[in-house]
Length: 196
Image 1 (cartoon, rainbow, N blue to C red):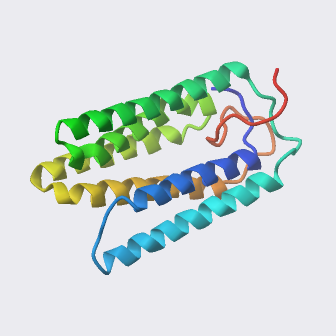
Image 2 (image 1 turned 180 degrees about the vertical axis):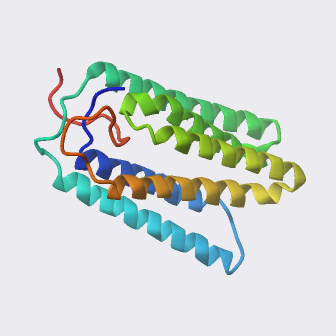
């Protein structure tokens, strides 16, 4: 664990980032009414959560509880995120070339889920582990369903991943920050501020 103290700014950033990504996942499936309305409603809820996170982060900017930046933590965070985007991008391109475009959401969801596992200790957010495992489970369900009917993949994986990310964003936003130092943070990228 990093020993980082959770802050309202970290919670806001977590809600902002995961809210935006949840919105993107809700846009993956193309559904007929009335399910399309449900997906649009979920996208709106995710955007509102992201906006609320942005407000919380902005209001907490410069607060006394913002920890100093740690360059080693910043490097580990960047490495995990770059590896995630590289794996998702290269994997999606390879699936497209091999005629497996229907399974791109499965691959990307699995990569997203897996990237939360090494991020949990980097960000000091133990809830990222169950989130990562749950997202990987959604990818597995999408893979199995895709073997039966590839038309089910975008709906299952897009809605499932979106709901999990939105749920974690809401937990981060509404979870109270403890008063004193603890061994875990709220799962946002390293804070801006003075470097050690």
